[in-house]
Structure formats: C-alpha cells, structure tokens
Image (cartoon, rainbow, N blue to C red; front, top):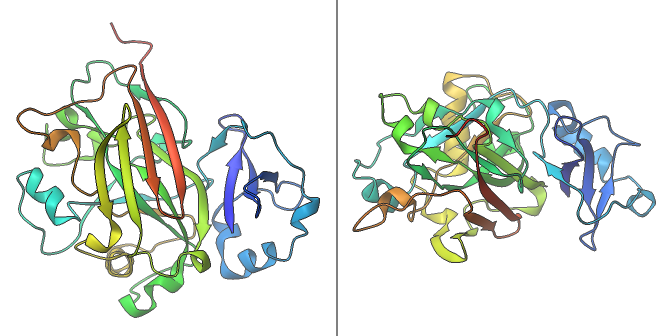
Length: 284
C-alpha cells in the first residue's frame, strides 16, 4: 500500500494511492496515519477496505508528511563511503546518530524556507524508515519486522549552522528542513530496502545518483543499533544517510541552494518530491 496524508498544513487527513495512481480519502475509515495505524494488524485491516468506494481527490491536492505525530526523527550521518570522502571525514566504525527536530517536518512538495542569515543551504536525498512496531534491543535479523514502511526524506541542511559546534542538530532542524513523502510505501512492497536506486536534481541538473546497496550500515543494522540506545516507537522515523553529490562536496567550490532554486528527489518505488527554495519573511 501507498499511504499518505492530504489537505492543508496542520489539518491533514489520511489517504492512499490506488492501483491507478489516484489519491483517495481514507478519513471515513481512519482518523489519522499515526503510530497506532502502522502496526501489522492495523495495516492488514486497511488492505480489506473497498478501495473503489473511497472518495477520489483532485490530483493537485496538497500532500503532507505521510506520518502524523512523529515521536522521534532520527538520522544517520556519513552512511555512504563516497559521501564521507567528499565531506573530508573518516569512515565511521558505527552508525552516527543525530536528531532532527520534528517541527522541521513538511510535505514532500512544500517550499524549503531559507532561514535568515543562512549562507550554506544544502541538499541531502535519503531513504526514510518508518517504525511500525515497538523495538527495544532487537537483533538485526528481526529488525525489519519492526518496520511499517519506507518513504523519501530530504535532509535539508544549513552547513554554517551545522558545523558551528560538534552537535549537528541546529543545522538540520530548521522549519521546512524535513520534507517527507510523498507517501509511505508499506514493507510488503519493498522486500529489499538495500536495492533501491535514488537521484536528486537541482534546477534540472543531476547532483546525486546513488543506490541504497551502497550504505555502510544497512536498514536492518540501523534499526537494531538505534534500538539498543532508545526504544523505537510506532511512527518514529529514521533517515538512513545520503549518497555523494551534496553541494558541500562540489569541487572546486561548494554550490549552495539559493532562493528560487528547485529540487527534485526520486527513489525507486517510493515516488518523488519537488520543492522550491523561498526566502524567510524575516530575511533582509
């Protein structure tokens, strides 16, 4: 299934994408796509719904983040060897875990708002994992059983903010820095999360080309690792790192996102995102 949330920001309702690629309203049957709706049992019940009777919605309907009330938004740094190399940083011996503020979450096609005084706005295409079952100290062999599904994440980053200290969070958590979606694709439709091609374009120019098989730490290992240090709850989201090609790594000089730029992100089987960079209202 492809599950989504649609409508004005802050007032989204649950929906799904039918076999013909059309958006349908799930709200007559489901209050929202939060953690309670992502268990194996809840998802199994959704497969029994008479999809053809669900109300159709216009194709230009706004999509929000596909998961409501995300408890934790985790991210993994430097999880592709070539990205670590372009950043001039050593290959990590274990996953680098940091947090993105849940307030940064936005819809897959919402604008990216460039913060006032931002000078090094960068892009990062990532595969996101959405937890569907409580996970605490799980083994890698069982870790994927705790996953509800997958979606595209854009880990927008302001590098000047990010590297002002040893903690990356403030450069990763600004409002609009977490486009998620367009939909959550359930685990049964993605049998191998390490077999997905991915691309990102800026203003129509290819910047990132990657494959999830190039991860240093795969999805199962990441879920298991995080579960050793914190209990993962249904609805939690984990971004799994970005392939090479970020603006910071471009030679001979970095290239940063500017107001008016457009970004397109795509992952095989998960759809695409499109965003435009706009100025913050307080920008001078």
